[in-house]
Image (cartoon, rainbow, N blue to C red; front, side, top):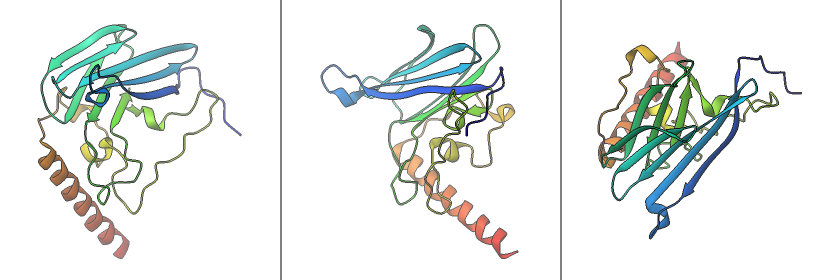
Length: 188
């Protein structure tokens, strides 16, 4: 049975990834997160063109951020207009090799006041299902960028440029490092 939510607790309403390119549908993505707190719902949208490199972030249909930069990763952090929410988007346009990540790898993450959207309960208090992980492989871009957890004080608003090759290499190295750490911890 779901547990009731506290009045100030965030919850998931919906998440959607759409192909919206004019000529080639898959060339542009619209990623939409809808979440609530109490009786208020909020919408955050990332519009990302792989062709032009244009990336827009909207909150409540108002533009929050724009850049034109071709890369396979996107990171942006901001504070809501009313100052009550610190938000952070982590995204990648490619999925790392399935041998290094979970089968349901999450490419788009929204963090709200330090909480991952993917981990928020549903509006009725129902907890979300845990990501399917085989072993200790990353289940999302969050696990790659923040393998030791999310610490707002150590984050810059815009992440470093990563090529597909360097991103895949980083995934491989972090997975290997985490596996070594886990094996060492289990042996003690």
